[in-house]
Length: 325
Length: 308
Image (tube, rainbow over all chains, first blue to last red; front, side, top):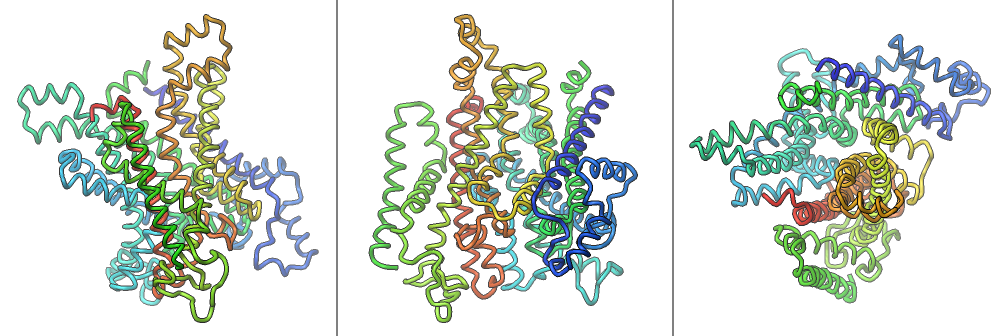
């Protein structure tokens, strides 16, 4: 088990390293120059040449790569070209916002998705299951950003229940400081988190329903019924417990979904998070900020699948035996 | 809309219905065909897909206006749906139905061809890795690990934004090249089990080379999960293209893409919601149909699901 874990962690670090290298050289070979963003076109050529020398962009890519790695090893992400401030500061500001949004969405995703999946499998092929199957198929197929816009239109514009953009009241609550402001933050969070959460929940419910049904055909479920276990006990103790294993795999897969989703949802709802920061950085060719954002994003994805694997091994004795073999 | 556009639209609907009926009758002789149509939403999925394919092919026939010409920017902008503009007009007074119909061409093309690239690559890599095993497998699968860890949306953004505006062909290639990692894992697992079967050993004993064994004997027997994954994957690629166009870096304007149409409508969400609503509904319908067909295909082709 320990040897397996060490191997698995080492592989994860190697993967992240490869992603970092790949992004670095992708950004390096891409034509089109940095420091030529919309607001930098006016800069005279000799100033630009000086800036490029100062940033060290005149050196060949491999030299820059080694320097970049050396800085990275010290925990230094460099300076952002477009924001004119340390990348670490910009990220430190944006990450909590994205974590808040993604965390709330994840909570909705799993609570609603798991509940619906189990309920549908229990009532399979009856009316509630058929209706919910169509609803989840629709939500699963809808573009996240479009659903966000429709919710915005209905609940923000027409009904006026929720604010239409941003993450807090800019005048009364620039920072979280009172109970009122905490509620204000939650109020702003509701629509974007619900959008991302419901789309995710639709996928989770479909997956969970299929997993529950697959298990319901297993021999040990028949055994449980045969020995006289109550229906509730069969569903909750035998079916759900085993279906939770595939649920853990789903947990690992949720990270890439949340990442892509947050890029689009943050744009739709003007939410000042990582996704929007990274998108802007890419469009402005802000190399240091892009590299750092991709590093963080891939770390998140890899950690997600590592966490899922470890959890699976911890929960499922069959895997534990195979892991040590 | 002119009378002949209405007529063509009716013909398109009838043709879609006819396609479903014919397919059902033609496949009824085979067990997988019957199982496919037993799925509650399979027929609807095929019908919706057929309708959108017909509309995409016959876009000039089923519409009465050009998708890019500004009809009358002063008097006809952001008009609600009416008899002359069945889905309304956008801020440039363009007919939304025309744009949805011509947009189907782009969405279906990018979705279909992007997935074709992805499935071809994924199948090749997965088959080679699974068939040769050892170091070939190790090298290829470590590469796939890295590919799966890449934050795909960022990589696509980098590729597209940095290389300036891309043509449709390059867009399809870039999407295809970043979407095959999952498929290759699936194919590898399938090939690993098929290659141990007796008929593969027999083919090898009769002197078939690796190419022949892989393409004639192994892959045809591993086709079912690949087809299912491809059907479900087209929807994902379509959503991805819409997302990229929504972010303003997909298909170049003024060509109508469903994603960029949604983005165009955002500033007028409160005053002209139909400009956002209809292109999104088109995406949702097509992706729903693809997912329904994919689900039905899985039930028809994958015997492991028979228990359900």
